[in-house]
Structure formats: C-alpha cells, structure tokens
Length: 404
Ligand code: ADP
Ligand code: ASP
Ligand code: MG
View 1 (cartoon, protein in one colour):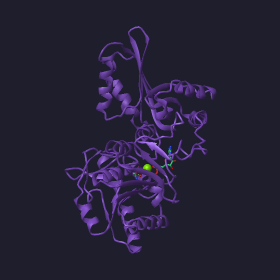
View 2 (tube, helix red, strand yellow):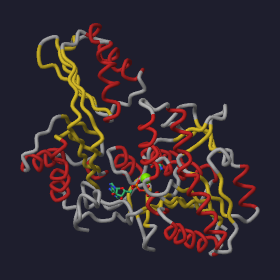
View 3 (tube, protein in one colour):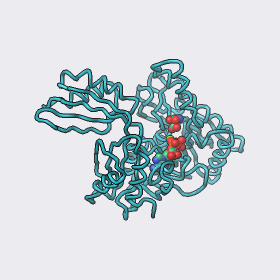
View 4 (cartoon, rainbow, N blue to C red):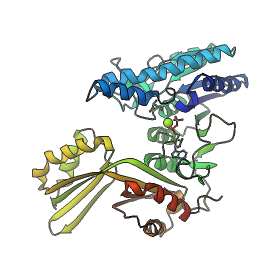
C-alpha cells in the first residue's frame, strides 16, 4: 500500500459542487488501495476577502491577528471536504495545522515549517481514515497560529509528503500542469511533461505562481516525488524529476512577476562596507531583496539598484534613508511601475548567446531593459510594468516554446 499526499488549491474547492467533485477523486484514490493525506487551501478568493476585511478595520493590520483570521479560511475547506468524503461513505477526519502538528518558527504571515510531528496523522491513517489537513498554517512552540505566506498550502503538502515519507505528492490546481508560460497570459503556452527540480524552483521564484517557491525548494532538498495536475480533468500533468530531458530546448519556460518594486540609491561612496551597511539595514526590516546591481558610473561613486516585493517598497526606502548619511548616498529613488520577466532552462548552462537573444527579442518590441540578472539557468530583466504581456509573448515566441 502506498501513501499519497494530494493538495487541492482554492479554485478546486470553491463551492459545494467542486468540493463534492474533489471528494470523489480522493475517495477513488483511497478505494484503489492507497493511504491518502489531503491538504486544502481556503475556498476561492476567501483569503483575499479576509485580508480586505482586515484592512478596512486596521492599518497596519496586526500580523498575529491576521494569521488567526486567515487560518480560518483553510478551516472552512477541511471541514466541508471531510463532510463530503463521509457522505461518499469513506472514513475521513479534518485536522487544523495545529492538530496536525505542523510546527513553524515564530514569525507571522510568512513562517517557515521547522518540523512535523507525525504521530496524530499516523494514528488516523492507521484507523483507516483519509486525513485532511489545513494548508498554509502551523503552530509555534508557544502555541501561536502562524501562516506560511501566499500560496503556502503547496509547502504544507510537500512538508507532509517529506515527513511522512510519502510515495507521491500531487498538486491539483486549475491548470493542467506547469506550462511554458502563464497560460492566462500566453494562450499558446504548452504543458511541460516534465521539469527538473531546479527549473521548477527558478520558475517559482521568478513569478510562476503554480507552486510556492518554498514548496519547490523543499521538494528539491528532500527529493519529494512531485506532480502538478488538474483537479478538473483527469489527465496527466507535469512530473518533477531529477533532470528533465526536454533538452532540445535551451529555454523551458518564461515567467513574469508584477509584484516588483525597484529601489535605486545613487552616489554611494565606492569603498568597502557600503553594500554591507545598506543591505543589513534592509534585512533588519525583514525585507527580502531579489536582484541587486551595483555600478560605478563615476570615480569613487557607485549606484546600487535592487528589487523587492511591492509591499516592501516603503520599508526598503526607509532602510536606505536610515543609512544614507553613513554610506554617502545622494538620492534614493523608488519605482513600483516595473515588472520582471525571466527565461528559465537547464539547457542554457552551456549555451552562450541565450541572453543576447532575449535582449534582442525585447528590443524588437521596443522594450527598455532597466536591470538584468543571471544565474546558471535563468536570465531576468526588469522592464516597465506596462510592457510585461508583450515581453512574455515575444520571449515565448523567440524560444519557440509553443511547439513540442
Ligand atoms: P491554486 O489555488 O491551485 O494554488 P494558484 O492560483 O496558486 O492555484 O496557481 C495556479 C495558477 O498559476 C494558474 O491559474 C496560472 O494562471 C498561474 N501560473 C503562472 N505561471 C504558470 C505556469 N508557468 N504554469 C502554470 N500555471 C502558471
Ligand atoms: N489560501 C492561501 C492563499 O491564498 C494559501 C494557498 O492558497 O496556498 O495564499
Ligand atoms: Mg497556489
């Protein structure tokens, strides 16, 4: 008998009919002889709605209470899904993150899972039940409710699969797998049959919402067998593998991220320690920095640009201001009308000229590149926000991703 973890996203459990449909699929897996642990997200747009309500009441929203509020969304899903499974005549029990003993660090709204104590889940499985766990939430050692960041149910699923030594972790969502670009933006995007862990991680971290970055990271670290597929149609999805061999292609996917703001600090003294001072101040405000570029346009003066999530823009500016005198900064500029487009593919490691082709395709669309960053298997460009759709479509075409 094998153990399968199945995760269903918000769209998949939006409303009674979809919940009943999902319940049938889960019960079918159970009746095929597998043990099943299910992870669910809050139904539909409930998380967004709860955040909206909180904002109408408080600004800033107290993070601890926001986590208590948001965790209720997933609690709605687990209870309704358990009821639907019981109605199908199978045994099931719902568990909150705390009941399932998903332990996290004591950080609100973006906690990391530090451990999963499997004893309760094991007991329920041993009693023959399908165990339904609330995604996106956990509990600290001092019994505070935490959430794992947007899209965090994916991470709950991968963490459970890893802790339980599951044979397979299936992410069921509203698209048929991981695509060569966001199918909402590029109608010709095609489903990838397989993708490597590192490509999935780079795609996730550069904006492909389909799997949360931490889930991709954890799946890679613990080599969790992962599959992304549709909860609406019963078709094969995308399998995540050690090394994917769609290798006729240099580029596997194009991603975009509109949740980006750019900060530029000009005239910084060109001497050891300035970058350290600046980014220590930024990190001190719990702001994650993505891409960093330093250039030295004039003798002894450097400009440093970096990107952060839009919500962190003001905190980043304040951080830079707090050390402006110490680093000799002249100006601090912030721009949230930007986006990042990236090309990802393990095939580009040994192929020079891929970046140049990317810049050429953007130039042909008259798109101005503001910042560039590269890794072994990714090239990212920060561009004006208004150009993002044209950029993604042009890159998808340039690298012939619409054809197998
Ligand atoms: P869920 O609620 O199931 O977690 P999400 O909305 O978080 O679903 O993620 C699925 C969405 O991710 C899709 O509807 C799609 O628009 C978006 N997406 C962005 N990039 C990609 C990609 N490369 N492949 C597939 N989906 C993508
Ligand atoms: N409900 C949470 C969110 O909307 C977690 C998730 O969907 O994975 O971000
Ligand atoms: Mg998601």
